[in-house]
Image (cartoon, rainbow, N blue to C red; front, side, top):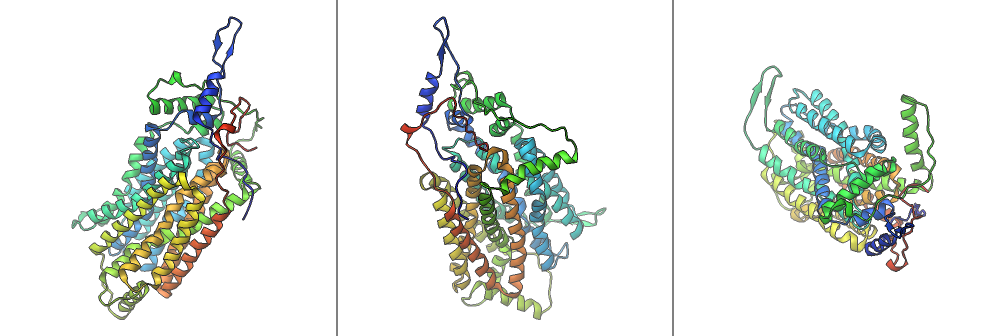
Length: 545
């Protein structure tokens, strides 16, 4: 998997050096007056815009979108056990329903990636989040398992539009110096979602109400309200995004140079509280690349555009990084989301277990044998300790994201990925071997911490791929991650039926292999500030060489 790094994006110029050179980047006209001819690359302009309140607010808005994505993706882990009596669900049907959101994302991520790279990040997220929230509201009124599955599928199709694009959108609003940190902090909302989801479920599911809706033939019960509650972050994110601009990287890559500069000036104004006309950059340096035009329209034009966005990802020098990011995301999603879908059921079985110390799989096997030997009575209640343990584990999960956010600037992405993935993979294997139930739950929780690396892998992709292909590359890697989620949730459901321990061994080993693959990532290169010379001819802006 080793390959040479196609672009060197980790060279971060010193801001003071840039400001000094911008101050000297004027010239004298014939009358002796200084004429302001300052120009800079977009990356240098982003550095000069500073870091402050705008970046933090933008990160929080992106976090709300990520919160909606994770809550809608994982909510079925709490909804289906509570809905199994109303919808008459079997264990196999629960497994397939849990995989529906991931299947929808798999089928549509490619399209959304192309759309985001050609039409813009902001309009894609605005449209997709709004429609996803509407379909989620409709799903809460589904009278049977088929209609519920179809409406959840439609909601997930549009959820896919923002699930990967938001990482690109977040990364492109931060300069090279703070990008990794802000993507990591934004990704912490995925961990926060694993705390909020059981909290909201604990607040709603124990309620005892059943409002009959005769023309649908249903009783509106708490689990239906939970479906709507999990769509609220998307509705809030849609409102917030209406007040946000398009990514300056996308604007610049599509030739809207003045608009891109205006966005950077707005960031500068919000961060420094200084007037926009005091921003030292007056124009952006533009690459003199010839752009081919085509008269082809319609479906052929769309196909040609998608091909243009995709083929370079599977050619050198980008092919090794496409393969690596896709494989690592596959393993992380298969483990984290695959187990999390069954997490409430596993914790519920442990809470209801009566007996001495034993392994997790022994408890699950005993519960399955008891059902097969007796009369099965539909029980859709969830034990209180299930919510409590889920919240504790979610707190640890979100703490890991925040810790990673603080460490990434000092340690770097590569060491963090290698250490976390290696440690969590070993913990997953040990969770199956532990006889003490509390220790097993702790190790199982640590096993889930591999999900904290999803944001880091997206931060890696933001650096490895040029602007023109970045959203498509991240969407492809996230699509492979969703494939992993679907495969993982169904395989784990199968393993829980036939061989529980094999699931822990398999997915623990996959995470360890991911850790080894991350050793091939390029190290972060830093050049001393005094050696950096910013010239007007320096025009590298993350576009292909």
